Length: 281
View 1 (cartoon, rainbow, N blue to C red):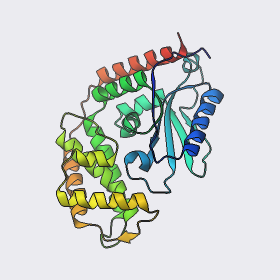
View 2 (view 1 turned 180 degrees about the vertical axis):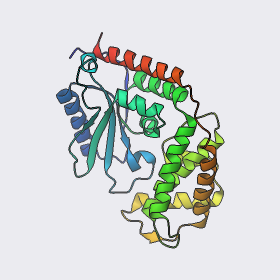
View 3 (view 1 turned 90 degrees about the vertical axis):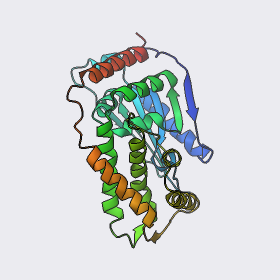
């Protein structure tokens, strides 16, 4: 494998992240790069830690995007477009090929954009992250992103919050974050994606004071205890969930533009330039 292009890198590890576990994740990433012969221009934390509502026992969910050498993309039999590593007791490390990440982004998968905006970064090539995020801002389709969060939020609403008199409070967050993301999109009609973490979303969406107070209390409790227990679904939060899901259900019915060839061409150009850059040619 040719020596890859060197660029400025960034890293941001949260103060509450255990140094020993972070070091093991770093080692796992280095082994992936070495054993698979790939470059990893982005490795971030996903899951509850990056979403802003970790518990004391929250696992670590490292996700990464990787780039293979140019010759691998020219092979008659393509390599798999995912790399999965063995599950550890406290962390997991898995990643997507750049081509897969780009295709999913174009199809409205908001997970890719969340990785690009994660506040917790094990390592990121600054230019790669900036250029990919800029591309997503132009090429990601707003209505598809809304459908993504609507599907995610409503699925969790049905699965865990069907009986408002008795809900697992820990699961409430998995319906609440999509709802507040949809509220952010409603208030920012020219944008296709918002901040990843719940506290920032709440701060930027001017939720009603009673809803904000409920969320702050739940976040504080979740940060201090491994098990929140069960309780009635707070009425203010239930109204927020239902109103934002109702809005998104109507708003996302607008069909995305049929002609998205420009976005595909731009994604193709980014893919080719990135592969060449990290291949060293």
